[in-house]
Image (cartoon, rainbow, N blue to C red; front, side, top):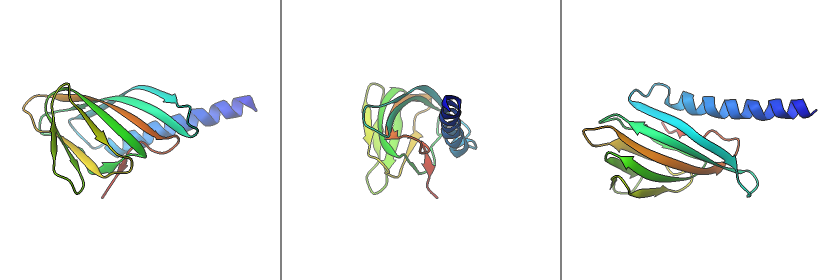
Length: 133
């Protein structure tokens, strides 16, 4: 019984990773590296932290997350567009907050590579990224 639970949890983790990878698989010039993932004290919630890298001129497709995203820009100049709002430019050392289930994009508007640390406070078991058509 214990082994079945371990296998079920392992499958959920792999499925979450595959769903994230599949959502961005065709995106050249864009890389995500998961740094850590932990359950939170709030039932059904987890924190996921990633390093996200953009080549110059690369933008993400319109997408949402099943929870909040907290961004800290490490290098480069990124422009975030939350649907229905004016674009916001964020530079190294600056932060940006994206509310849960909010359609948004991010684009490297500089001439060099850009990178951010994204921290997601999300519903556990849901795909981290949902691309919006």
